[in-house]
Amino acid sequence: MINVAILGSTGSIGTSTLDVISRQSDRFNAFALTANKNVERLYEQCLQFLPEIALMVDKVSAKELEQRLQSNPETQHINVFSGCQALDDVAAAEQVDYVMAAIVGAAGLSSSLAAARSGKRILLANKESLVMSGDLFMQAVKENGATLLPVDSEHNAIFQVMPDKLNNISVNVDSHINKIESPNLQDAGIGKILLTASGGPFLNKSLTELQDVTPDQACAHPTWEMGRKISVDSATMMNKGLEVIEASWLFNASADDIQVVIHPQSVIHSMVSYSDGSVLAQLGNPDMRTPIAHAMAWPERMTSGVEPLDIFKVAQLNFEQPDFERFVCLKLAYDALRAGGTAPAILNAANEIAVDAFLQEKITFTQIAEVVQRTIEQLETVPADSLDVILNADARARSVAASLCDEMI
Ligand code: NAD
Ligand code: MG
Image (cartoon, rainbow, N blue to C red; front, side):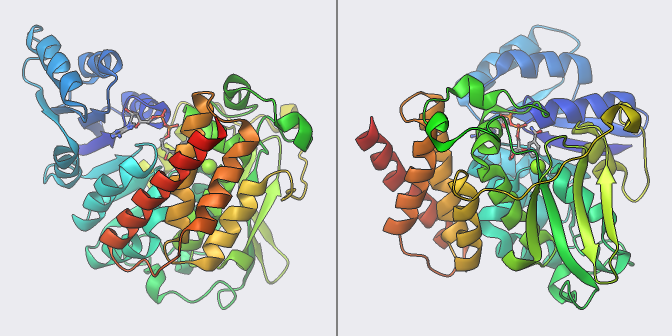
């Protein structure tokens, strides 16, 4: 039995992970479930999956959950914890084999790192941890013999179509080498990584039209059902920008190695273009249970509950270039990757504050990019050589971005 800790079990990725586990219950055990504040959903998940550990970061919520679990004989045995340190401890716990890192935002960094440092198989959905601290994170994976498997659908697709010798993001299996020692993409015969993007709900809106869109419109994604933060990121295309940075760390690629391709159907989840003219792609229905099941079963395969792709129903696949003028966030992310150091952490933190302000209707949709851009302009980028430096950049960026949002109200 493989014990899985699901960090962020009440979210969109967490729920899909539990759905996959429910279909594979002879192989996988939901050992620990964690959430921030959603007592109702975590309680329901505890009833269904009977984990050993349930954790709520928020202390008041944890107390309430504990009382509810205690009053039911079936769930009395579940140990309830709270707080951020306990979250890191769960990620590193000896009994845990796999860690699904599915917390949203910078809040997921510490526990993802804890999983890497304790040599776990990390199923990484929390792209923000790689964006903020890619170098440190990859080093922690390497030094502690962790296995890092991407759950983000595009990166999971790229992983699937990379040549074996370059499947460099897992270090526990003999045939797989670590990225830090791996050749660059060109030496391995790769021309470009083609990172696909749906373009989000506003693909064809003009800059003027974008000024008036509401949070609900931004969260109504045409092909994927996701949490609200990543849905807004998809609408601004910051999500794709964060993914460009994520791919650079996972696959040892430079900004010039990664081409974003708008593909509205979200059927091709990404491609790799080789020097001999071959382009390899991974296709499937837009359902996160596929990359989740892939990362859990790798190097084997297992069923995930996802319907087989009906290629005749899809019929048509379209591609277009991204428009950096309407989707400024994508350009800002490329710039941050090229700048290196703490620039991606500043970008990510400013974006989290701006998205939150937009969701609370304090700033407009187009002001998200403005807040991020102005925060980057105001802060100096320094080498990201320790976690302290990164967290400091994150905190300063949050404070600058929050002031900018206040000015805009
Ligand atoms: P979500 O908002 O649906 O869920 C977030 C989860 O994190 C919840 O369980 C919540 O309780 C927990 N959480 C929130 N704040 C926390 C905090 N401060 N401390 C501890 N836990 C906290 O988000 P999601 O859409 O499932 O996305 C999760 C991550 O996966 C994000 O990094 C996102 O970019 C990535 N991702 C999501 C999808 C998707 O389809 N949803 C696809 C690719 C990548
Ligand atoms: Mg993605």
